[in-house]
Amino acid sequence: MKSINQVLDKTNLQNPRVSSEQRQALPNGSKNKVAVFWMTMSRMFPGVWLSTCGAKPCEPWVSEIAVLSEAQINQGLERCKKTARKFPPNLGEFLELCRPAKRENEAMYRISESHQITKQLSEEEKRKGSAWAKSMKAALGA
Image: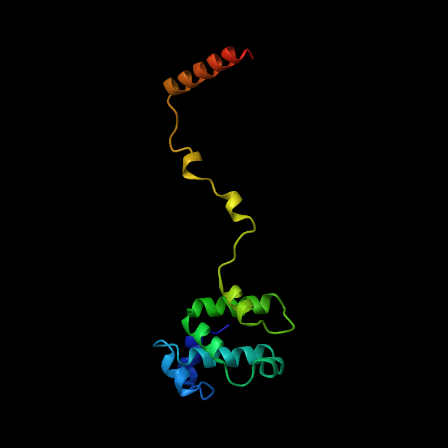
C-alpha cells in the first residue's frame, strides 16, 4: 500500500472538499492528508463510505485525521483491510485502529521494579538467606 506522501507527491492533489475554515485550521503539512484519507476510504468501501460519511469530510474527521501521523493513518487503514470489514469504521473506531495494539491484560505481564532481580546473589548472601530461612522454620515449628 502506498503511503499518503507517495500519493500526494505523484498527484499533487488539492482537497476541494475541505472548507477554507477547516483548511486554515489544519496543522502545516496536513492539508492534503485528509483528502487522501477520504479518497482512500471511499475506495476501500465503495459506495458505503460516501453514503454514510458524505463526499465532504466533517469537522471531527478533519481535526482528528490532521493530527495523526502518516504511520498512524497507514496502520489504521491496514487494520481496516485485515479485519475484512464490510462497513467503514466510525471516527472512534478508526482512531482505535490507529493506536498500537495492546495485549489483553497487559498489566499482568509487567513486573514492578521492586520485584525484579537486579543482581546475582553471592555465595555468602545465599548462605545468609538459607540460614535465615532455617531459623524462621525453626521459630515457627515447621
